[in-house]
Length: 140
Image 1 (tube, rainbow, N blue to C red):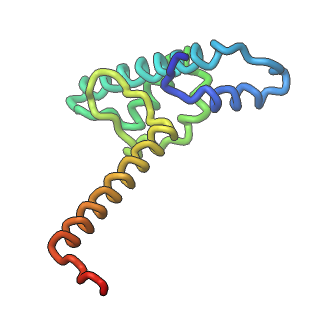
Image 2: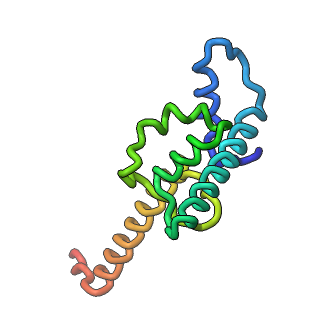
Image 3: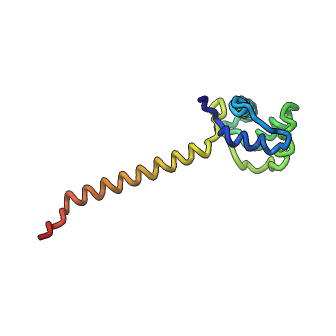
């Protein structure tokens, strides 16, 4: 089983929104996931280059909008970025070279579960310590 940056089930759900799609080959979500990652990296890299050209270390949403509007291969995204106000830095990407894959819902659940487990362990440890310090009197 191959892992991908984006959940295969989500990609399949998006593909099935088109009524012409009947069946989806097993490797299609993986290929599309990797394609999405490559597109994100390219857009981010160009936005960071533009930011560095303006002596900034952070690429804003307006920089990403500029990249999409100036490259004809991203014409399919132009309708979406038209809504971005160029004066409002709604989101930004720190310059690390390449875009990181977005966190998946599964990763978020894992982090949440890990934090919950950590809290439980701390609570149990505290309770155990309290029991060692204050042992309850034995019942007769």
